[in-house]
Image 1 (cartoon, protein in one colour):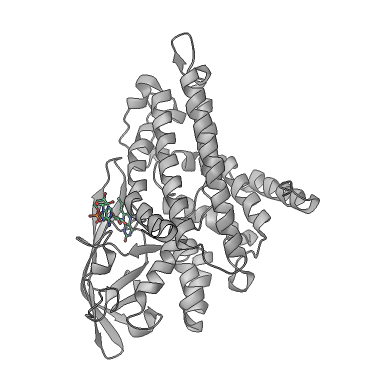
Image 2 (cartoon, protein in one colour):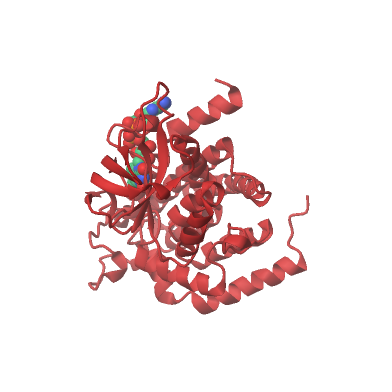
Length: 401
Ligand SMILES: Cc1cc2nc3c(=O)[nH]c(=O)nc-3n(C[C@H](O)[C@H](O)[C@H](O)COP(=O)(O)OP(=O)(O)OC[C@H]3O[C@@H](n4cnc5c(N)ncnc54)[C@H](O)[C@@H]3O)c2cc1C
């Protein structure tokens, strides 16, 4: 297998580097670096996405007919690796990587025409209404009910842990439209305008001090029937299709490698006794393990990208494997960062967003996110389906347990 780039691919890499050099301003990079959350705050992420949209690069994974780049696998890979290494903001996946592919596959022409361009140009900001109090891993037990009333559904119930619901103007949600003997039946997939009367959003602050998640309440919320994606009662299959993209639709290995490089830089400025922490045997061993883990994850992600390239979906096993490994590696990297900083690893700065803080921090700015990111990353093995659930899926499909 020849893994070297062709002349054409090397020319594309140069084009990407020139673009990043010109458009990725120092304040965008700084804002990204000082964001401990899972993805950028909307003012930062949307700004970057609009710049990408102007260049025609907003949707690297989408086919051209829907406003995507139509890039080859090699080009996607180059794009992900180069933009991660350059420190570009990570834009929200809710539109581009989650509801977008669902609308492309199951949506009506009118839904495609309306929603897909608005995802690309960052006009819409989406949130995911799946989990409910009492329905997380056992998602099919969800109780938020949508009752048909003429050409509308009337929705009552509550969603919880809804990431960035306080920023979003749209939600894709799973709702119960009927009671069937099998609980997976009777669920529908619906698109909701967050400004509809009857919706209220209550913040939930996470252990890292960030306002990322919320509880969303629906009180007689009227949603047009035309906002349903797919047939009534068939939402479970649609929702699972989306989860494959949520868990496996990204190239996270480039981002993880960039984090490791940042940690190494930091570790060379902090001392462990006589020498820099980066020169210790402990650091070398942990860095090597991380490099091996990231390389292995990259192969899984390339396999998934190759399926997407040929018009398939990520596949439940590959996406569960990618989600599992990405979240575990991310947690081990954030633990390494905290350990590398000695006492500074315990330094707590409560101001959010960190990139808008005016006061001089008590530790070097590059080290400021270590502890908040360590705490924030505890959620990686929970959201998008817990690690135990991913292992269950892999065991069922691969080993037949
Ligand atoms: C930061 C954060 C952001 C989130 N964002 C969103 C969002 O935007 N939208 C959304 O819809 N949801 C979101 N979630 C919710 C997330 O998907 C759920 O928390 C997750 O699916 C687990 O559900 P639960 O919290 O109800 O825990 P439970 O399902 O109650 O699980 C509790 C424990 O039991 C284990 N367990 C449960 N069932 C099994 C099983 N069958 N086999 C083995 N172990 C099992 C779990 O692994 C876990 O350790 C978010 C969660 C977090 C923490």
